[in-house]
Every structure is written in structure tokens, then in C-alpha cells.
Length: 636
Image 1: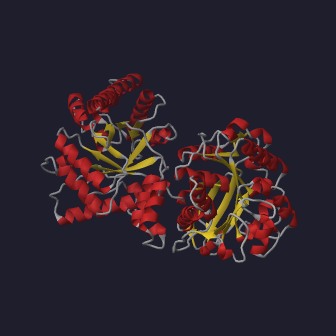
Image 2: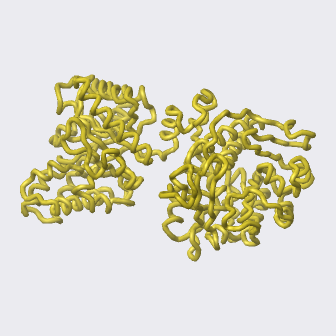
Image 3: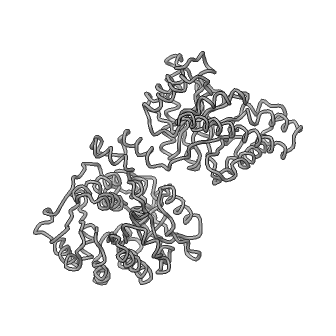
């Protein structure tokens, strides 16, 4: 058994994708940022399908290079082969969606990092870990990168690995088209044909569009080109034909292209063809490396390509294995897959990195409670929240599973300082105490302010609600929560819904569960739930069942504090920790309230305040960890 299923080699870039659809690239107002480059995309797509993938490439020693490395890791791709180049910048690509036929594209790749890949970057031990190695055509265009690719292929074959080529012909990257021709897929070139043909014998699998086989085979006639390629290699040839599907040729090229092996296609709306071939190859790899028949492998590939052409972006559009399996079982219901609500929920839930088992969150997002304290000013409030962050970081000590809840209105400096710290960061949206629910003014009535939020911020909203609310109250609050939820999804932000029915009316063991069911019925699927500390086993069972019945992919529940004494929280933790869906706590006033009162009136200095809050936070962490340990031991 080898440690890796596939290593891809070649381009890596940051794709700046025009957010507006239907216009010229000249008129784009904003861009979404994704990782890109065929081998990078394929490695991510393969990882989402459960393959153990890695990529060999170079990135710059700057923000975009770190973005690629971090995103690859989040996708589950092995980054040991990603070399940081101290002298060159990470490649950039600007691209847009004009219509289903036009996709303007500009490559910023002059002396970029990945084109400095060299033989020294190819480690034999690393190559030996892989069942297959996949090269892409661009890196055969330059002597230095070609030498690196050929070394990797020789080592792969020496160690019994399969080898694959994505022809990936981009004329301007071979120097046979200008910078403005990034969208071009074919320019005839005898030099390119000759270079490609020198390497074809090294591959077991070769994949390309008809135009790419034209350049590899040296003929504008597809059958003639395929036969020319076949004369040079015994590889299985996969010819992609767009909406007509793809055809596999494991042996001699037949009289008609249609006589090759095919897999089922999918009648979907074409929205964006950029990156579709990379998604196709990821699905093909899944079938190929699982030793499926070519029709089955092509079914996987066609389905992954269908996802790609129906969504915005390249790597973000590729499916998880669970999503792919569901799609193949259920079939197409909405030709525009990005508008299939059931499929999109599954995509959202199963393509995000897994979290940790337990979260310990210091909540100091309170606003009204601070403003009511003696000695409070906006300046003092902001300074105190920096002390809260300092306390949280001291307890975290760089470990995963710790977090904060912090607002932007009072705690802006603390909120911004927390970015990149590794903390889980929740950020409130509600106007404190509002019922019916109203939002912080900075968010905007359309929740458009979320477009300014960093991706690591989790949208948190507290809705004071109760099953006995009248129809008018429920309709108003439902509309507000749904508007915020949809805006969070649109901005690629996770969503936390906090409900506290005990502040509205009497509660029993079924109250919280009833509210949870109502929100799901309204089409609201929170990533996180924040629930009050229920001491009843039956109440927790009912709440967890309500969530799992509707959304088995939710991130989970965190328990809030309500300024409860430590002993009361410990009792609630003891019950809640027995449920795997409960991921931890988000407690605030139990930690900071007494300290804040003393600090705001000058009775406590900064250092003492940080030390005391860190002590209280650490104490609650220990209580939670002990409760979880005891629950696990009891279950065992």
C-alpha cells in the first residue's frame, strides 16, 4: 500500500474570478479569489472524492503563495511538494464569465514561481509514495520545467506508478498566442506538436479535448490525430467532446469516434466551462485508480464536469464523494445545478474542512451589557475587549478548538486582531435585545455589509423567539433570519443561530426542539446552533434529534452561559457533553462580568484583568473537558 493515490505536477495560481456575470472583463467591479491551475485543481478535486492527493509546484514567498498552500491543506491535499520560491511571485489569473461561449481570461505568469520548478524539486522518495503521477502540458513548454516533469515520470515508472497526461493546451502559455488570447484553446504549431510527441510514450493515460488531440497528433482531423498519437503510445486515450461527452480508446482507434467506450452524460445547463476539464479529470482519476470500467470512470468524470460547468469558479465547484454519489443515485432535477437547493446544501456541508471535536469559546460580543456598566465609554469598551482577546489567546496557546465571540461595534480592534490567530471567530449581527429581530446598522437592511467580512468570521445572530409567538411575530422574525442566512451563504460565511426561549416564555423539554424544527421548515439550515444550558437529558435529546433529523451535516451545538454561576454551568455541561452533536460552550459574562466592572471603574489593572479572565476561562475549559471525558468513558 502506498501513502498517496496521485501526485499532480505543474501550474498553481490564484484565480481572480469576476463576480459579475454577463459583462466584459473590463467592466468587472469585484473578483472572487480561488486557487487555480490545472494540476492544483485536479489535486483538490481528487481529494474531495476521497483520493489521497498531492501536488508538486512552486509558489511565491508572499500572501498569495501562502493562500494556495493553506487552501490546499484545507482541501486535504498533501503540500510537501509545494516549494516556496523566494525570488518569484505566485501566478495570477484574471477571468470572467461573459456567456456560455465567452470566458475572457488573462494569465499573469511572467517568470512566475511555478515555471521555476526544476529537477531538484523532484524527490524520489516522495514520488515513490504515489500510485500515480499526473503531468500537465504547460510544464513541457520550458526546458527547466520539462526536465522536472520528465524526472518525475521516470521515477514514477521506476517505482511502479501509473502515469497520466492532461494535454492542457493553452497557446499563449506556449508562446504561440498573445497575452490577450488567454481564452484561446487552439493555435496550430509544429513545434508544440513535436515537443508533446517526444513524451507521449511515457504515459499510461492521456486526456484532452478534440483540439488538444489535434495539437498532440499534428492534424486538424480528430481521427487522424488520435491515430497519430496511438502510433506513439499504448496509453488509453480519453477524448473530451464537450456536450457530446467523452470517449475512451484503450486499443486501436476505430473508424468512428462514437465507437469508443463512453459513459452516461447529464443534461445540465452550461454556466461556466472554465475548470470543467480539471473536474472531469478528478472524476476520471477516481474511476481509473479504483479500477472501474471505462464507462463507469467516464460516468464519474462526466458528472464532475457537469458540476463544474454549472457553478462559479473551478475548484470550489467540484463535488465531494458523498455529493457525487447522491447525484448519481438521484439524477438531475434542476438543470442549473447551482439552483438545486438540496444539492447545494450537500455541497456546502461536505466540501468544507472538518472541525475539531470540542470548542471552548470565550464570548465577549455583548454590547448593551457593557454600555450599562459604570465607567463605560466606547474607548474603554474597545480597550477592555482587547484584554478579553489577550486572555483568550493565553488560554488557547496556539491549540485548535478555542474561539471567541466578538462584535465589531465596540470590539473592532479585538475582532481584527484575532484574524489569523487560529481562533474560531463568531461575530454578532443582531441589535442587542431586539424583538422582533433587528440588525446592527452597519450590516445594512439587505445584509449587504457581510460582503466586507473576512471568510473566517462566522455570522452569529440571536433571535428571541418562542413556539407560542403569534403568526405576525414569527413571520417578521423568520423573514429577518432567512434574509441573513441567505446573505451569509451568498458570501461564503458560516452561520450560527442562537435561540433563548426562556427569555420569552415558559419552557419545557420540547420547547427548544420545537423552535429548531420551525427554523428548518422555513428553509434555514444553520451551520451552528447556540442553545441555552438545559439541565434535562430529555431536552437535550429532543434538540439533538430535531437537528439530526433535518441536517446530519451541521457543525454542531455550543452551549451558552446566560451569566450562570460556574456550578450551574458544570451541571449543564455534564448532561450536554454526552451528546456528540454538542461541540462545546460559548460563555461570556461568567468569565468577564465581574472583571469588567472592576476594570471600568479603575479598581483593577490590565494585567490583573487578563490573568483573572484567563483563569476563569481555563477553569470552564477544564470543566467541559472533564465532562466530555466522563461522558466518553461512560459510553464506552
